[in-house]
Image (cartoon, rainbow, N blue to C red; front, side, top):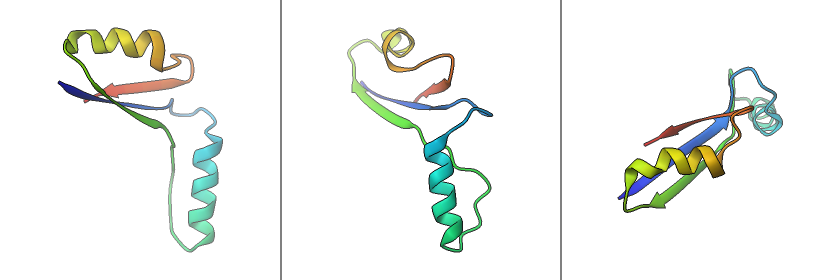
Length: 70
């Protein structure tokens, strides 16, 4: 089974990469309210029930990030 994990900075925390992307877009005439840059991790797993444990132990930092498993 293929799963996708989306990991992004928590709302309200400093996201320098997102801020840089937002500034570039605005400098080029685009109206952007907010940009958050994160990561997507795709995994092929045999047991989907283990994905949450994998993410929480190895893939994200609970102090500054949040995640969604698809």
